[in-house]
Length: 302
Image 1 (cartoon, one colour):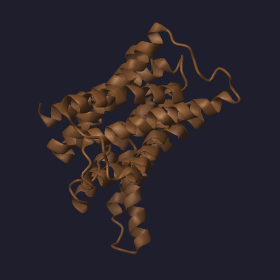
Image 2 (cartoon, rainbow, N blue to C red):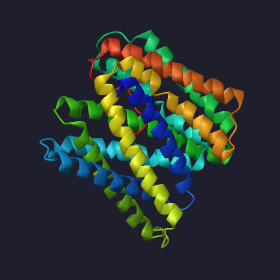
Image 3 (spheres, rainbow, N blue to C red):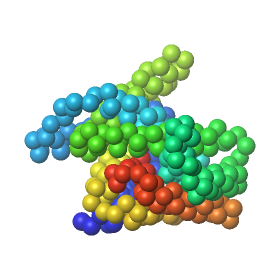
């Protein structure tokens, strides 16, 4: 399958996963959804490992731990935002990860006292945050401010996770192993969050319905398949083509939002999304010229 087709399919699967997360949020907490997403991912990757005779032994467990910590925190916040915000808004905030990475690059240049900060990167960051302001202001009620902050923080933590994924790739870790330990971290972290909630909320664990089980299964299957497809697309295809195609996720989310949830975006929110997409693409272009070719470009899930 061509890399461009894999990327387009991955973005569709991620957007569909967002729909399932939003629907499942009516029955489960974000911690529970993260846990079950991790469990399904573990089963899928374990089956792949057994079928192909692969190994899960790693020489860099600490790197997987830190990648899992930032990635699972980002995923939990993102799922929380999806459950409370319009679907296109929550998805768009997660795509801010490319802009966050540009900000990290600027901060690193300043702290290391190295080369001069690229003014174009600064412009990308400013445009990205202007886009966030436009997306959030017309899309949210005042009481939803925390949910918007959670979505924005999810994008920042996702950017950190992508940097750690790059480090794991340089250490020789294959994508299936990275996805396996990320899924393991999600399953454990989600369970721990719900155990902690038991102390003050006896109903932290929710019972299952047939609909709820199907939604949880769909979240895990869609997320894991999309993650593997996107990883393969970045490995096989051109970085800028993939980076452009990944923003199809926002388009798919907008269509789902209108079709399933009857969500309507104001013109200011649409302009904000365009600013975020443009800033993300420009930042990706500038990073590919200044960083090694295996640097992360951002994806829809952490």
